[in-house]
Length: 579
View 1 (tube, rainbow, N blue to C red):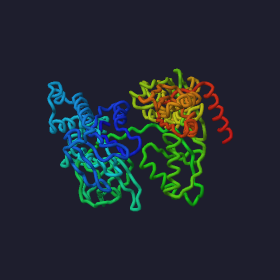
View 2 (cartoon, rainbow, N blue to C red):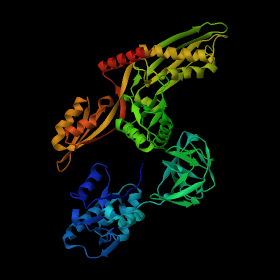
View 3 (spheres, helix red, strand yellow):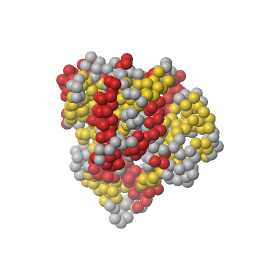
View 4 (cartoon, rainbow, N blue to C red):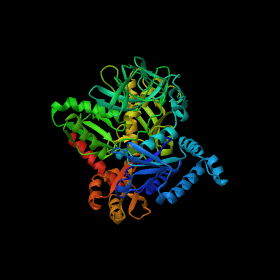
């Protein structure tokens, strides 16, 4: 997202604290050009303050909450060598990013305090440098210097380019001015339920928010009158009448979702939303007691508004409520929150992996739909072919399936083309193997036939849907399963256990890196989601509770033939049992 940042290394008063290892991790893991702008005076129980490497002053924090700051030009004698070394390192890292400091460095000149502060500010705003502060937030040590750093090095709203997407021009990026005089553009980045109703946190990118004014939700076109605007100070609210560009405020009475854009109604611009990946796991849930149904509905409504990655739907056949998300833990957290925040005990079914289906070869179709009843019947005929779409083609099209109309003449009247496309959409909602959504298919309609009396929208829709379903059965269909990018961290002594556990779950190990001091190992692997159930318990027991892992959706790939047969057989049995 190209966000300028400063770093703060916390808890230097804890046993085993090592800020230099953290800075190395910032460089190696996050690929940041990071350098310390402070050196700690003492670590663990001896931590009392920091030395400012720019102004070359010692800051010590006294008092119960570190409120008394003592500034001294005298650097502790045991730190003089380290301070010189770290200051040189800071100038070298800064010279790698900033031309002015690089020129001084090559000329062997010492940059002044003003030169260094200006260079750090320039390169922090350009996202080419990250100054690292340190201290202990709990005891207020180093926090004041960090806040000074925020003021000195982070950008004002007009200094950082932000872009909106022009929906009328195929989402062409448009730079936001950041000026309070221009038309309003604001982003609701967080929603929260309070005793007074929904509290919406909003970042203003340009223009002014004024109490009593009317604003428009760009996503759904709803107009909202601003009844109350507050500035948040932790959990205290300060009522204000207006807020300008760059400010973050909160508002009551705004019914919206997280990441909605607001304007004054005269612009079709949307702030670029966060990328929301596909849901990879589903779970059927219901309240344990029918009296809890009301709170159950409120909870799902609130959670789906605040988290774009959580989807809620009701299954048409079973009438069950299905929640879909990014993994087992993601869904478990929301079930636990329902119990804690809404007093709703939830009964959940077995988690279901979101499989998909696709085809492997080009197949032609020629389908006649003919049905005669009393009065006018149904008549439609469609001819064409289906073929697989590559991932590159899907990315280029911006959609998982494609419909191409190559009809010439009026064998299919033009008014029925949209019905044919709807029939294609109907066919893609459920595949023939496991009843999952179909993706990666291009449908090309070439010809057909109609009847002057019996043809209708419904006839062509039904005909096209049946034609595609039949063709997909003959096009070597296959089942796709979600593959997760898994990152496991554990002590080196358990490396063998971790690798063996991933191999047992049919995972493909991409890399295995041991930390510089040899104490930890990080394993990166691609593992099918269906094999990840219960992995957290297995990892904890295999590493004496010291191992941890994260996973995120990577892609869908075809399952092995034997697993596809098992899944198909299971789906057929469930369908027969339901019938």
